[in-house]
Length: 204
Image (cartoon, rainbow, N blue to C red; front, side, top):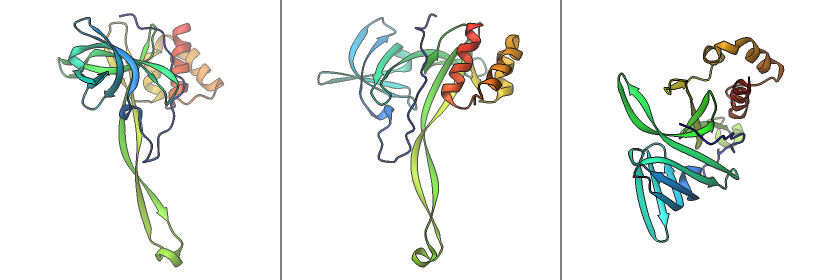
C-alpha cells in the first residue's frame, strides 16, 4: 500500500475539561469506502468505537472500520491535514480485524497512531486556614496516543515507546540512530521527536 507522504510534527495539548477534543468536532474532509465510493462533507471520527460519521447537507451517514478504506480531514485545532486508513490488525493469535489508524509518516518504515481520551486526577492543595490543610482532586480529560510500525511484510507491530524496542526495529542502522538521537537530544516519547527519528531512518 502506498501512503501519501505525511509528517505530523505538532499536536496541541488538550488538558482543559472545557476544551473540545478533535474527535468531538466535525471536520471538513472526505472518505473512500470499501465499495470505492467517495463522499465529501464533514467528518467526525471515533477511535474507541471504530466509527466514522459523514455529514452531507442535513444527512448523516455512519461507517464502521469494516466499510472504510481511507479518509482525510482538515483539523482546525492543529491547522493541518490528517490522513487515516482502515488496516488489518492482529488483535489476538491468528485473528485480525479492520482497525482505524492515523498515518504519521510513510516510508520503508511507516509510523501509525491511534488516539484515545483518558481521564486523570490532579491534586489541588489549599491553605490550611481555608480547607484545614486537606487536599481535593480535580478530574480532567486529555488525549493519549498509541504508536505502531508497519514492517516490510506489512504486519502492524505495537511500539511501547522505549528506546530498546526502537533500536530493535532499526537494528540495521542502530549506531547511526543512537548518535542521531543523542546529538539532537531527542525524546522518542514525544511525538514530534519520534517522527523525526523515523524520517531520518527512512532517509538513510
